[in-house]
Length: 319
Length: 319
Image (cartoon, rainbow over all chains, first blue to last red; front, side):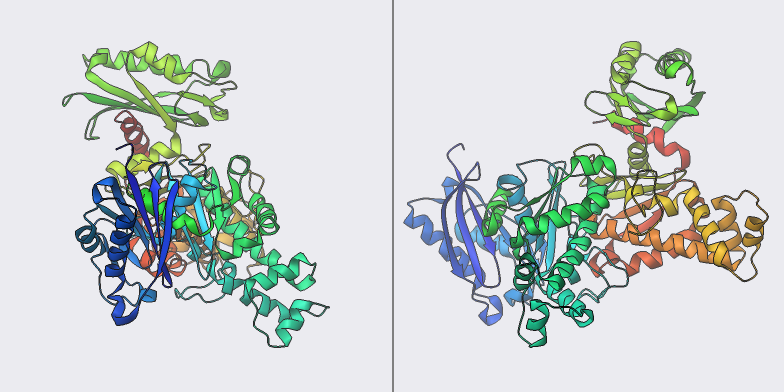
């Protein structure tokens, strides 16, 4: 057992990332393949099986060398059955028996969970979470997702929605979210949310602002442009960052008040803004937490980047 | 083992409640004693030991007949060490070695947790939680407390503050809380919070209202009077209940969005308003939850009343 290895798979709509890891979570090999979503995504699982088997041949390894394969997937995952439904960015229109197919195709035990949850497991195990039993992870990307590890367990809730931090209500009268309700964190703190806040605040902003000029010119903007302008002292951009930080501090503050984790780890593309974002969120976090949480729960930036998924996925095989 | 029993103790500032229960959580005997907080609370633990030993004699039972004693306590509980600090309503000014003293005095293994957590365990095990592994409990009393059972584990967080639902921020610009921050759920949904909301709304209310008359006369009011007036159709009282329900629905909605429990159980004195309160909170809960949570997480009224504490406390002995 001591020399056995893990395989982690991070399945996304563009690529599937793979890694072979030690039982301590150290990556030994990494590769990736394009995700072929043609023909209702029917090539995806066979491609994953072929790629694993090819790389095992390449590295002169056998199925028996592995404790298991763990995978993170978009969509709604039934972790017991090992099935996925509703993964629209994979073009999967029906329930996929991922576990059954991959175990048959590789001869290796297989476990699966959703992509935000495995990223949370990865950051908790080998990233900013320092392998603490109480870590909450929030990812600020195209959308906002998350995962909660509490008392050492990844929480799923009764229907798999535990850790859906993107849909925490931060403004009851706020923007309409794709989920149908108003004022979700995702509407203001995702990459598109930051841009939405910038566009709205620009309309009422009267002073000098490079960000406003870019917007008035009709140029495409990104959350990165907003943060870059703010770092240069742009007044409008600073107001936008302050508003986004306020909502993140409120939501993360309530995560702290409810769960009192050791760390709340912030990852995803928007978090590339780094300490510039973190210090602003932290100021509001402290405003919105009561003393014992304020003193014991810390905000941190994610450290693993896009390897969090394969590392966390691999850890599923250890259960 | 099968015939062995549990002892549950629910220690409060006024009384200590005791029960002897089967391993299935059925109460066989109950009694209580006054809590003597004189002399810095130094009589409390000896009184508990004496009361247990006396009742064991009375029922012709020995220490060996019990799996253990579990206790819920006010203050800050170190569950590993079995100690309590900062229980001001018990007049305890220093750290109390409760576990060591009670094990020595009774010869029975002893476990302890805080009072809101053991009430959560009780409602989850034998009350409205139907022994489901994912149940959140909120108690609306003099203050607002709570406990979270997730994946079958009672959550504590890194410093014992998990489940502190009373300090979830529901209104960033709201009332100052005793904890030092603004807009905590406790400031509007505890018994005193409901009265505070009523007093404030009465000042701006112009129509006919029995509740306003009572307030204008300078009479003492309680949350029960507010709910009783609302049930009789009093316009001001209905507005107060609506506002309290809005904040409870927002906070419980975010509990749902983060944890997706099977049940969120509402207990404590304010919940005596029953379905009249629950249906109003539920309408806002549905507004503030995204679809998968809205469809799978249910609000329920607590069913055990003041026996939740001894039952949940006893369950600590089963760990």
